Length: 200
Image (cartoon, rainbow, N blue to C red; front, side):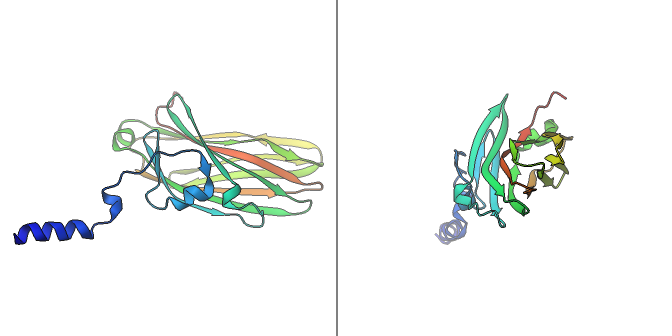
């Protein structure tokens, strides 16, 4: 009897998250994802959790940033749509952070390819720029679109191959930098991709 009582008491002290599986990820606002906390959600076998957002001076709240989900041959892709705008002469710094947990069988058997893709950038004048730097515990990626006196310098895609065994949890930190230039700049969205079976 005492043993049963001890087991029951131990179970009652365990966090609820021990028993509850993370829900599936669905299209929602970034604020909804922040509210998931450490439990997060699961998309294509990968658990995404611990979301945080730093709007800086952008004026775009987490409730106005849309998180959309896509798959490309089984590759989880997260699209962050924020329409971040920098006024002429202004500079913005915005942060989108989270963790990605990969199942053990994927971590041990396959390399993982991280991808960063930049959506459309609207530069209204002769000068301005927008960049996203993805900082992770396995390496960094950077994409940008710049116009300097009418000369365009783009880099819209970047990839990083991580050989097995890659870390079980990858910390993802996206740093957005937007310079308004002479007539203002808008960054519409960016993608984070996680390919567990890359072909190159």
